[in-house]
Length: 332
Image (cartoon, rainbow, N blue to C red):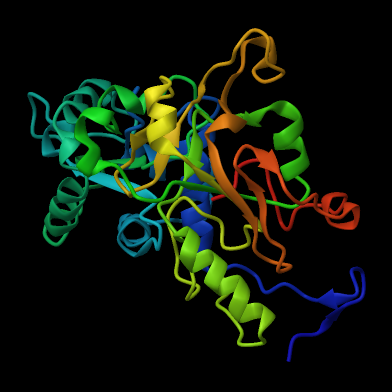
């Protein structure tokens, strides 16, 4: 039985497993810290695995290629993509390359060939059964970047358009928290908040989310995750309290761009706000409130709190003044 945490009055938090530690380190370096840590990363977010392993945090933990491969293969949200490129270390001699070798050219070559997404990752994982040279592999985070030099939408993201209606997701939903919802209203919509894009999931559907709330109210229980059965959904935190459903067709028609990442997350950097609007101050882009279809509170059973362009229920102050659960600036 876990021992009480006398400092916080609760239970002591179990230390993260090595697998989670490695995965979090990869998310940090590939999404946010590559440039300040001196890791070579190209505009599509690719870095050489040998260089990643040489990063001090992973080097001090004696991380291995097999652990990197495991993080790619087992990520529940498909956080990472892998590319196999033996020529990444090719040279005019037979001497093995060093981890400090400049792999920028090889990374650029990979970027133009990597639109296969999951196929490229599967190919790389298959190659790792016989080729264990880390410099032969390139790795990237599939989404979630705050590194401004990473311009994934230029080639690695699928642009969504009204010209291909059959490819548009039926559900586009952003998960947030009680304390954040009033800030969204006050600012006139959703903003990137330090990341390159605002993230959206393709589930749970609105009917599923409302049915989940009903089950909770009837004492039937519900899963801990965002879906009706607690399933993992890429682009959605498990502990999201407020779900903002977007009318993507209306948003696209108004010129707001959306892309789909390799792991199915829907991304947008928003659009320039109307000069008369309170949204988008200081040149910030925003996804305006007018594109919000329905917003629901799912944890306390309030259900719909926004519909038809207006707030229909204001969350109690004791919820909105409470801090976000385990919220860090850059969540995984």
